[in-house]
Length: 165
Image 1 (cartoon, rainbow, N blue to C red):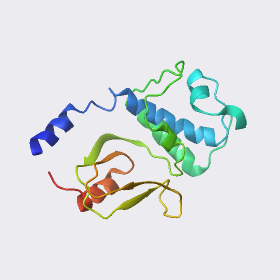
Image 2: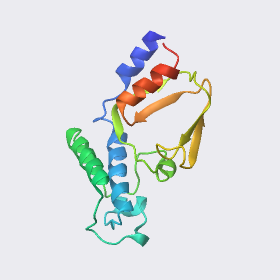
Image 3: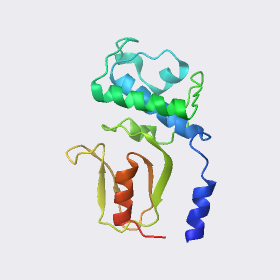
Image 4: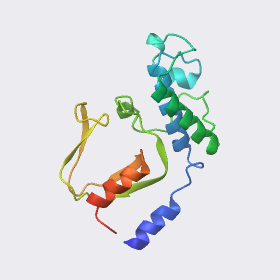
C-alpha cells in the first residue's frame, strides 16, 4: 500500500503543468469578481458567469475578498497560468457545486486524500458554518480527496479520521 501511495504521489502532475489547477484558480478569482458585480467581456467569462446582474468593469471588493484575489493572482503568477479566455469552457468538473459555495476554496499545489474514512458520517456544508446549507456527506469507508483549502487543517483532519497506509 505504501508503494501504491508513493507511485500516486510521484505520478501526479505538477500543479503548473495541470491546466485544471490554473482553471480552478481562474474560476475562484472570477467568481469573487462576479459576486461583486463585474461584467465579463471575454468569451470564457461570458460562458461561465451570468452578466445579467452585473454592474460594470470597475467593482469594489471587501477586504477579505481583495486578499483572496491577491493570493490567487500570486499563485497564478507563480505557476505561470495562462487560461485561454477565448474558449468557452473550463476544465473543472464540479462547477455546479462550486457556484453554491459561500466560502470559496483555493486549489492546493499538492492534493491529498483519505483512502478510507474512519470518522462518523459527516455532513459537508457550503461554507465553514453548519448554519449554512448542506452540500453532501462523507460516509464510513469513503474516499475523500483534498484539493482545496488550508494544508494544515486538512492534515489534522486526515490524520484523525483516515486509514493510514
